[in-house]
Image (cartoon, rainbow over the protein chains, first blue to last red):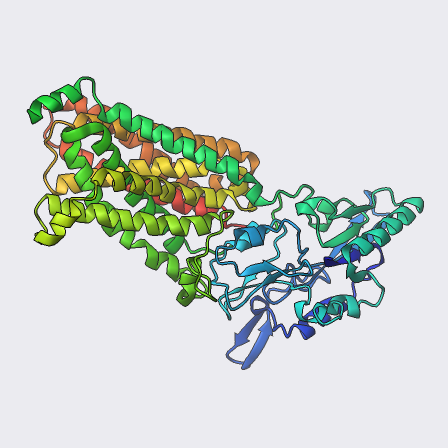
Amino acid sequence: MPKGMFVDTSICTGCKACQVACKEWNALPHEPGHFRYDLVEKRPIAVNFTGDSYDNTGAMSATDWRHVRFIEQFSEDRSRARWLFSSDSCKHCNDAGCLNACPTGAIVRTDLGNVFIRQEVCIGCKYCIPSCPFGVISLSEATGTVHKCTLCNDRIHNGLGTACAKACPTGSISFGEVAELRKGADKRLAQLKGLGYGEANIYGYKEAGGLNVFYLFLDRPQVYGQPETVMVPQQRLPVSSAVTIAGALALGGAALVSFRERGSREKDEEVKK
Amino acid sequence: MNPEVHIPGWEWYYVAMYFFIGGVSAGAYFIGTLAELFGGERHREISSTGFYIAFPLILLTPPLLIADLGRPGRFWYLFFRAKGGFPFLNFQSPLSVGSWALLLFGAMAFLSFLDNLVSEKKLQFAPFAKAYSRIPRKWYAVVGSTAGFFVAGYTGVLLNVTARPIWAATDPLVGALFIASGASTGAAAIYLAMSWRKKLAYPGLSGFELFESLSKIIELILAVGVVVLAGRYAAPLMRGTIAVMFWGGTVLLGILIPLAAGWYIPRAAGRRTSLANLATVMAILVLLGGALLRISLLQAGQVQ
């Protein structure tokens, strides 16, 4: 039975305990892009922070496997305001673009349904990076391989939940069997709809064959930086290949027209004789 | 389409140069094969030149590809499982299938290269030549040019089958565009090699010029098609250095001007003496345009 996480963003407070727990459990170093070693002060200086938000990573990366988004919304006359949070990570898609794209079999799905990168097999070809429709995977210059959330592969195969879910103080992130989590999500969605949150929706039931890490959003998915329609890139492979073959045939036809002049065959035979 | 899809960070001087050189090599090879299959003796010089340049060019490409890997020493995992050593192939991944196609194409290009040396008596090693002539050359030329079409085209499919907005939006035309560019640049490379070998005066040249023009027309249609298909995601192709490379380099210098020259040169033949120089310059422009096509399309998908 696949395990996963349900992220109920309606009760997220943006505390980033999940980010910290993720960093600690997985022993992830600081993001190299956020620090520069200062030669005068002889210590790393923070650079490239977002600076305009409590969002301190900006995106997921090889060392930031979790990213808490802060979304500020104001009405036209700024009399009403809303602050949305969402803790984002790898969604462990059932039809995973990264896994499909991997040319070495480094990216695998375990018996618990999580998508896992075998570091000892990854060659750093970087093809999985643009193949993920959500922008999850990144290359680490330090290891020369790609990294992303493992769904705490070591913890979940030893009877524990994920570190982020364990650390979440409001229960916004819950870990468990996907089927069970979906029941809870449906119940929570009905409750929110009853309270007047008309835009509330569950993200991840249909996308990419179903996401093992799925979300309850209070606004459209796009507001949270998630694509509204998810196209797993490999779905385009058959048509793309067919058109390319047609292109090859067109050029073969052009060569046939060009090189086979009228009557040239007979002339060749005459020459041979 | 999601703008937050990450950028792979492929270096243009490795990856785009591989796309280009692989395209030239594969283009020269399949032109060589098609000239041999359809053209017979009259086009023997084209096919032999195509086979002579295809193999040395494709030899240049594996180092480029390996250099772009995060872990270059593990490149062989593309072919064999890290544990157990069983062959590995992922049919859903153009990169995986393309690696095997490149290997197959390289092997066939090597055979055709040797075959040419033996048949033109530049390589004389009697037992080898005897054994060698038993393999029908057309047979492996067909296998090789099928692999060659694959090598020229899969790089475009590889870009199309990602989630980066401009690469995804231009699906499914980039593979065909790269094949057309492989054909036009392959023909230009054959032309340059033939003029260098001073083998230009032969009866089949008019057919070859027709093929050069047809491949450029197909390339032009596909290049315009790619931009139309990209729609609003074409923005990176419309500004800055990338726009100069794509519109100025590929479309104008690499396709339109050589097409015009291809129309003009046969009509002016006999009247001017510098036409051979003009044709040489045009062939160089076509190659430059082909390189800039790969660079501009690779970089267009790698800007924020």
